[in-house]
Length: 242
Image (cartoon, rainbow, N blue to C red):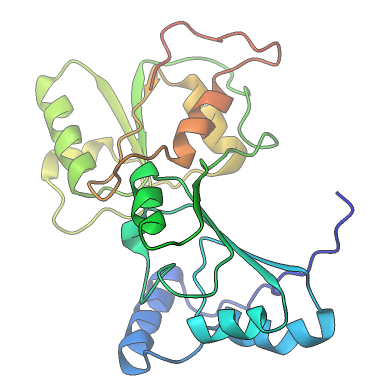
């Protein structure tokens, strides 16, 4: 689009995601005011790069960092794609943001009540990944994502009815999961084109959300739609649903 874009280099990962998450949680408790790696990098490079805009994708910034950017007349924007309940520390509730885009209409109202310049903006799918590429259909009711409490209960109810063939993709199941869910779990986390293939092949993709979601529409809704539409824009299977 004619813009010069600079992003933080990918960090070398020595530990797995679970170990890194635990370490980050411990560091947050012991050193609550320590800057994150992203914030340290930003403070190092912005003076030389001199950006017109800093765009954060579901990434909050320390208020001190934001005000430093604002002192140099740099525009600050956050597109928060996660549920608002998952914000850490102050999250977006601090001074320094010029624009905040969030997927939850209720969260927009809450932020605007504090005079934060918030706007409603859905998440999206990537058309290079989420497209019609399935080979053949099946009769699966497909779930994908974390097995949190709401999805866990919904799965148990559907399994108890014994009328459906259920497939569950996602991260490792929590220790407290009910035993009847174990047989439907695939031990597989799907992404990109493989996710489109599984979505497009299923009888239905159940897009359940956590209790922390209010008036919002998640990314998976768009991914499912992208996986079930042909290149000509016509519905590929009349029985596909959300």
